[in-house]
Amino acid sequence: MTPDQKWQVILVLWGTKYPVSDVSHLIATIRAHSNPAPARVVLLTDHIRDGLDPDVIQRQMPEFFLRPEFKGSGCQAKLCIFEKGLVPPDMPAIFVDIDTVVFGNLARLLGVMVNRKTVAILQSAILPFSSFARFLHRVTLGQRYARGNSSIVVFHPAECTHIARRFRELEAQHGPNGVRPMIADERFMSWANQPNMRAIPRRMAVKLPTEFMLPWRWLILRRASLPWVRRRWNGLIAVTLPGIEVKGEALLTLADGAEIIDRKGRRLIWSEAALGPVKMQLENYYRILQANKDTPQ
Image (cartoon, rainbow, N blue to C red; front, side):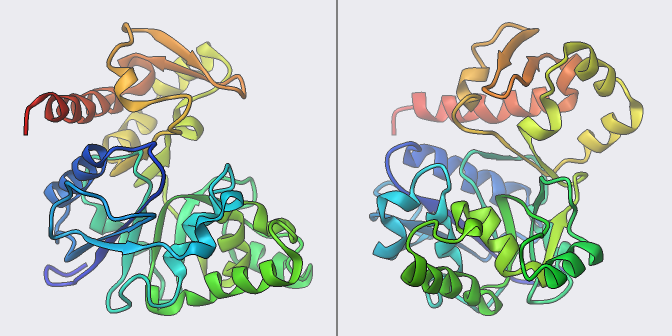
């Protein structure tokens, strides 16, 4: 990154799960921490939202992606970020889920891009994004491929419109979820763009369940005590919460040492011993959000 390099933040919002106050807080946090700050913030939404900073560009999501079958657990509606003409194509972009907490310079993630065709997401599957995964994808004709988590996506809008176009083509031919990679947005972008997929390093950003939650309390605490793990956590730029089972502001009500267990049996221990510096960073983020909501406008 150079001090004058321009980039943009992309957010996607439909329904009523997240109020405008959550969106505004995320935008303000990204702007405060990033250097250079984003030159543009674009919200792709199912309807124009009142109360946002007028500098935020709001664009209507295509009706195709707002179909009920694309707004469920597969979140295929998020593939609209690749729709031609929807996101301005003049600069690279970083998409973040609204339940992402930003601690540091988000602009640093742009350094993951190898070229303008790169799409970088969080690594989540056992098979990592690599030359071997690209080889496997090629020789199996797309039956085997590396995939990740799309809580954060680094991409250039000018070079990735083929992802949304291919999704529309397959839906027209086979219907919703007619081809297995179509069952989730992150699977589809990983499959459709496999030759140019890259992983956002875990030293930069993580998803809270995959990084901090394990079934065994003793292993959580043992791992959190390792000095090299602590050093990595100190440098994190962003952490994404799962949104349903671990809600941000609800964390503030937990007693120190309290546990949350998700549907996979993984535990979140709400303590500094288990979360390191991330516990205080989460508390600070959501306390400011809560204070803003409690302050009359």
